[in-house]
Picture 1 (cartoon, rainbow, N blue to C red):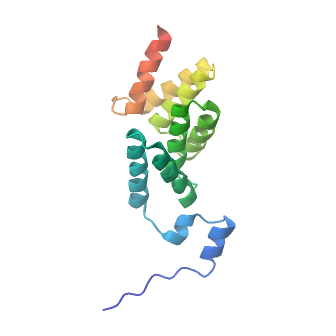
Picture 2 (spheres, helix red, strand yellow; picture 1 turned 180 degrees about the vertical axis):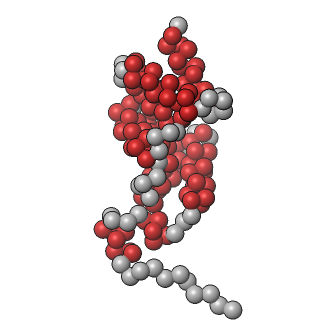
Picture 3 (cartoon, rainbow, N blue to C red; picture 1 turned 90 degrees about the vertical axis):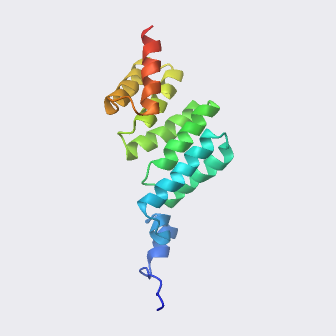
Length: 152
């Protein structure tokens, strides 16, 4: 029993090349596979393998720029490097794609705080807390700690 590869419409590759369709249209990774790649990127980042994580996050954006994973990861990397302008750009892109992500909001709050925008930072931190009322998200917990420090 042989299986035939799934054929794509003949214009799919051209749409990817033209930028009117994400690369993943051509590759065909499912949501779970994309999330697994993102998890590898975050694990690499947490292990201090920054260049590896950066490549993974850039690849995720190339794969499908409508998803937030790559932007969120690059934002965290730039935040850790101290490049608040680049971090702000990436994190804003991530939130445009997934506005209810507590860790991204917490990272953006930290960027805003470093930029001297305390009120905007507090609003981002507060939204992160609202999205995580049970205190399970590590990013929201970091937001809680920073808000407490701001109140002191």
